[in-house]
Length: 333
Image (cartoon, rainbow, N blue to C red; front, top):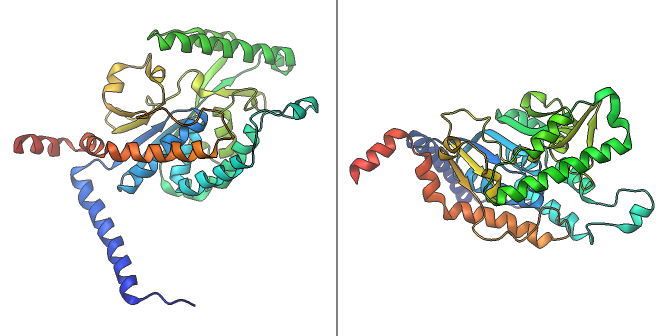
């Protein structure tokens, strides 16, 4: 059995002590307990995971987090401290998946998209229920819930119609948001179908299965991720109405939010955006939302998030400075 040299052991112990001491001093002049939000975006959300991993390495504490769709899985992964292992796991199963659509399964009446099964496997691998609870973090996960009228959603035709109407409205809204316009087609469809925005929190986390289902509720994008159902309630992707949940955090909090397209911010309160530190990719992401065949793109997206955080470290720490520290800095200058 190898024996650790005493000097090596003492060196490690001193490094850990210095790190903890550094965090204490950092907390004097810096707001090191932050709110962190990751937008939905399928595989693009690995970018937000990379940023969160880097922020934690600086000693910042994620005291409140929010996520939508895949962003929900990522913020919980950060609380579980399993980001590196989860990325490696997802890389492995993606390498074994040659296609994003299987015609043969479609003909056999099986799910033709592999995404949901792979997504569930990664969630199960990365989620650590005791760690999430032990973290003490406040969690917000955004989704959309439908209350069926006279159980009408049991009818397959009506389900297909609901999905089609919602999808068409969202795409038309997204087109207008690209032009800088704020539209409400999706909200009108939700009202017509008696649907409602819902926030799940850590108080809803009864067990690992419940956490998995809540993440899937927020990630439901038929047919890629099936229309989620629990009892008589149906769920769709929270990104249909709010893909970056900043509104749940306290007004005085230091908020860092991660998104991928400028359209995500259209229609949000400018005053809210003005008091947040918002990050988006410094270069085109090497992967699309639902490309579950590109293992290299998964890794590069995650690593880009870490690099972008490091590139912006000075700006981020300046944003997190306490008011007295900012005033003192201005006086010195």
